[in-house]
Image 1 (cartoon, helix red, strand yellow):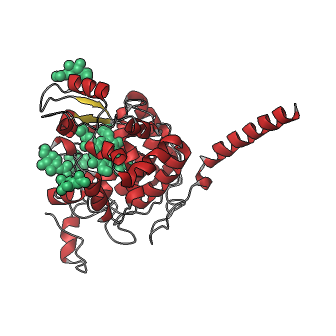
Image 2: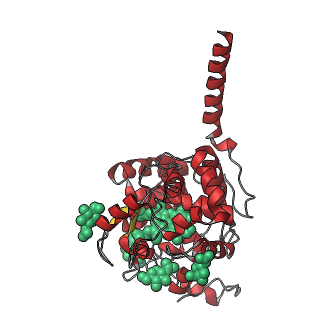
Image 3: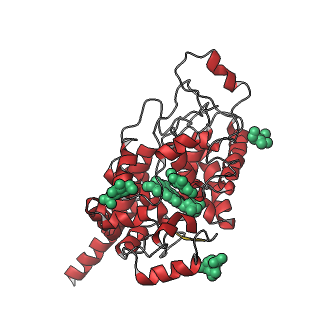
Length: 350
Ligand code: HEM
Ligand SMILES: *[C@@H]1O[C@H](CO)[C@@H](O)[C@H](O)[C@H]1NC(C)=O
Ligand SMILES: *[C@@H]1O[C@H](CO)[C@@H](O)[C@H](O)[C@H]1NC(C)=O
Ligand SMILES: *[C@@H]1O[C@H](CO)[C@@H](O)[C@H](O)[C@H]1NC(C)=O
Ligand SMILES: *[C@@H]1O[C@H](CO)[C@@H](O)[C@H](O)[C@H]1NC(C)=O
């Protein structure tokens, strides 16, 4: 009797512990770079978080895939010359006006539109004080949270860049989905992200879709032996020939939920890209995959840590960069600033 009650109490306590550990205070954050802080807009835009969250809550009801689109935009922004909103510019490689991007680079047009719509709402509420790079980071957070993942604080204070993302930057820093772990580790090391960050951030593939061209290297000319047979059969039905234009989900178990099932997929040899499945095949990363597959809370904790790290890559702060009026375009005249600026070499690519 007493021990049953004690067990029930323990269960109660531990479920509360679980609940409270999903709140902000429980997360470990890496040190923040100078100029970024959690309360940067506390006085200049107190309604920022609620404006973003209520807009996206509604938007995801109409289009669940938008969450994946927004999360991926933040990742691309940060990997390609830093989280400075350059990926949002019309005319940037991978940006909203990019017409001839290879499929492995396609970002959803709806994500760019959502960021512009959000900016209009934020400007209405607070004036032109919040950067597009910060709106992108906040949108990524809400994509995670509103898809069932952890809620966490986003360090803000980024400013928007004054240069376009070039195709060279994109090719240099964004690894291809056909990459093995060696290539991925090296790609992330260039950005001071380690092997644990690699496995953790790849968990972003718990939501969203991929095109056949991003994984056909595993189907043609022959089936990748590391792929589950039944899973392969289904992929051949979706992509019967080379260059079929079709898509499939990245996480077959829970395609629209931000959880740890992506890692369970990998353990069952049902990862979609080479860059996913090799995380389980390769001895250097296999144990990290397993640890997340069996412990979702551990994945959430690591994800918040690694996302915060990624979100601080080469940010512009203080009086560098600008606060854009329109996330798709640099402010009028700002492209001429370089001629009067102090020559720090921030401007390139046009
Ligand atoms: C580690 C290297 C990574 C590679 C090689 C990679 C590659 C890709 C590729 C090829 C696609 C599908 C594109 C398409 O065919 O339409 C994709 C989708 C996606 N990626 Fe990654 N990715 C990586 C890391 C990340 C990271 C760090 C995140 C975020 C934390 C992320 C989030 C996403 C999301 C959410 C989608 C789905 C997008 C949508 O449905 O529109 N990826 N990724
Ligand atoms: C993307 O795909 C193209 C071919 O469509 C390939 O040339 C390129 O190397 C790939 N690169 C990256 C970084 O995704
Ligand atoms: C990983 O890919 C690179 C580039 O394609 C290749 O040179 C290397 O041999 C591969 N490594 C392993 C362990 O498969
Ligand atoms: C696209 O995938 C769906 C579902 O997997 C499949 O039924 C359809 O035949 C595929 N389309 C093409 C053009 O192969
Ligand atoms: C924002 O900039 C883009 C690119 O220059 C332009 O096409 C668009 O009309 C602008 N939007 C607004 C609301 O001014």
